[in-house]
Length: 129
Image 1 (cartoon, one colour):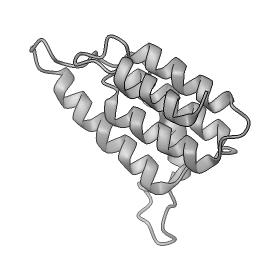
Image 2 (spheres, helix red, strand yellow):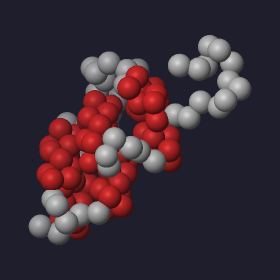
Image 3 (tube, helix red, strand yellow):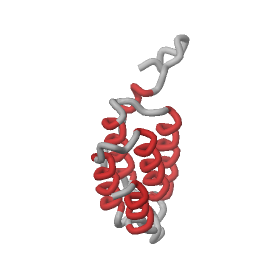
Image 4 (cartoon, one colour):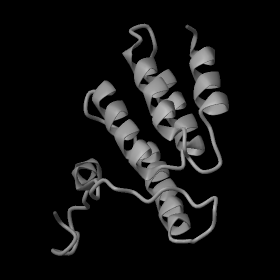
């Protein structure tokens, strides 16, 4: 299938207000990553679409980990920043008691992502991991 077909399936068919189809969205993304003729740029574009549509922090976290594996254990700073911002928004929303609140995250904090952040040479000791 073409990249457009995967994108349509992921963002139109699997997208939902409360995130009940986010796991299916993640499976579509995983299948897309398994295609051999897709570029890293296309993989990142698909991930950013998932990031925009997904309501589950667990799905976002797992999908980013898959993308990192596909990219040779690297990630662009802008992508990582987008993920952190989106997860912050979802975390705040998950604390509300409304019907459209996203599901609460169940995975541990992804501290393994910290090695993607470059620590400045003169950082304070409590900042240098």
